[in-house]
View 1: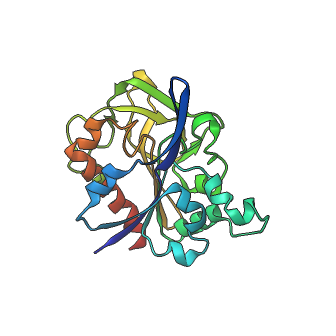
View 2: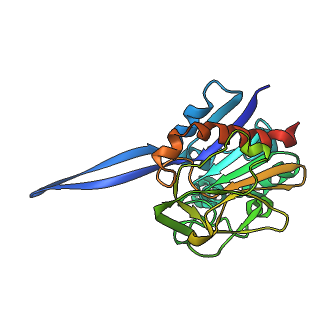
View 3: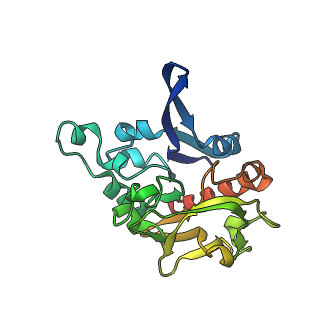
Length: 255
């Protein structure tokens, strides 16, 4: 049985100015951040659609029919404004459906939603991701702080697994590779914390499960790939198993 997954975000454009003596020139580079996940899901039952951040502004569905084409949606390193301010609103002052409310309603009907950490996830760098007090936050098993929520750990942090017998963690025994950062969040009542950062590094939740209506939701507060996920984590044989287990659990509400 095929499970259809929509990954939204995990792309960005950077610009640089190069100085060579008297002269200078500019360059622009497009980046994708989810290649480790794309590679891990190849040939599996998970059919991944990768909608980049700039495409999502206009192409993320405005109607429930569009969301119903998927079993699981992953929001990764993309801020709320990309859904709230499409060109029709930002440039032409027109009204459109509120896609954050649409996502909430889709979860209530049985959809599986995962938010993955990053500089534009949860509340994000300088608080600019702005997921706090949105309909999407309503369905997550965690809530966002109103400030810059990044927790940088340049020394690396190895997760403490709290519920090793949970199906999402099946086959993931042993020590996990280190991560380099997370978004700081608050747990909702009843949320299941499967893994966290060690107490002496803040004890921050790393993998949290929950539900809303008929749907299942999860928060992974570190990255989907570099830079917060170390190369060792992305190359770890458990990397693909973790995501497949988690996506399979999230899709259960669509059954």
